[in-house]
Length: 187
Image 1 (tube, rainbow, N blue to C red):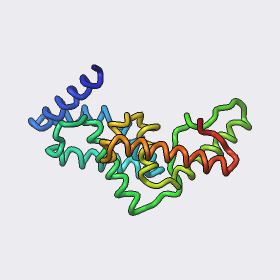
Image 2 (tube, rainbow, N blue to C red; image 1 turned 90 degrees about the vertical axis):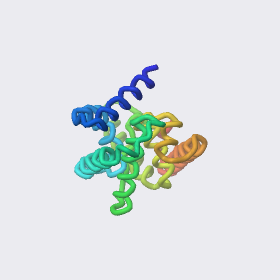
Image 3 (spheres, rainbow, N blue to C red; image 1 turned 60 degrees about the vertical axis):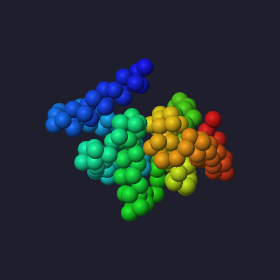
Image 4 (tube, rainbow, N blue to C red; image 1 turned 90 degrees about the horizontal axis):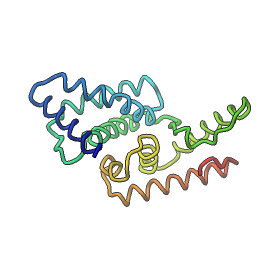
């Protein structure tokens, strides 16, 4: 019910914007700016680039708002635009590392453990960057953004089954690479 309420609220804001209410844009930006920034940051791995990509995402979304058919949630439509914006950026400049959520890293107390955790996180970033693009997208959207398989499929433009396959292959490959490096940090 909450998801439908959120969808209805977002669609209402889009309709208000289409009717000329500029305040509706501000509400949508405030609602999704942090999420979009976090998502594109994980793709670009650079704060300034992520700010630019976030801005480009919203400019693209609102300049192409007529393309939003209301068949899906505004959130997944916006993530799709963010994904395309990020991919276009990555095609131009390939970062060396891609960030992954710290929740996948074993947590231990103490200074030495913190140093080890930081090293594991760096290694995990590098390993995530080695994944094929579709696997990396599925892992980031599912783990970082908390999107469902259906939402991830919509953002990636593929089936639920393809998302599951990309996600599981990506996690499996991350485990293999991490094990090769002497770290077994993924559950």
